[in-house]
Image (cartoon, rainbow, N blue to C red):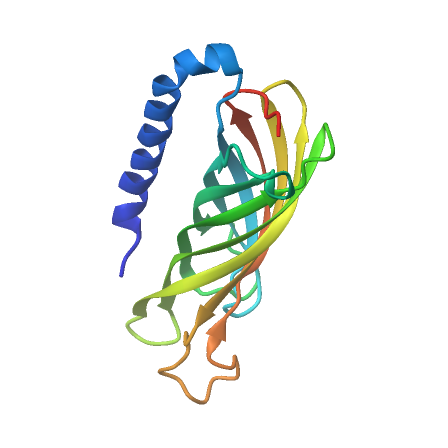
Length: 208
């Protein structure tokens, strides 16, 4: 499954949905002073776990904080994320290597701190990898996709009423990735990991 044709429409749909929710809640927000949406963009550097090296790219995410939760669950929410790693190939990475991910899941932010919020998250989605093996003549191009799981966490730091800076770490699990190559030493899985640094805009100051 090639994710690239779907990343643009998926992100567009997410942003349209977020915008429509903001407009729909604009009147209640005047009295409640809170909209549960945040939209962010960041720069990512990852170890793609294919040979040695790193890939660079961009990340977009949308957070939705669940409201009216019991006190013990305040700070829990949902996150949708898309990432395209296609630049800055370094080390022994294959030519043309690209990894795309689109996923969603649960995020929990510890609400006890005012200007910074550590968080943890767990997500599931689809990962897509492309590669060109130049060890053959002519070069061999391959493409593969997997249902993946992601664990991660980081810190959001508030720099203004509505703008927060994010430092994020993720560890991904791509199962059975090398199933076609039983002699491969990677143990039948791909485990990319890396960091994202970016900023997000809360449509209103989060009061949770």
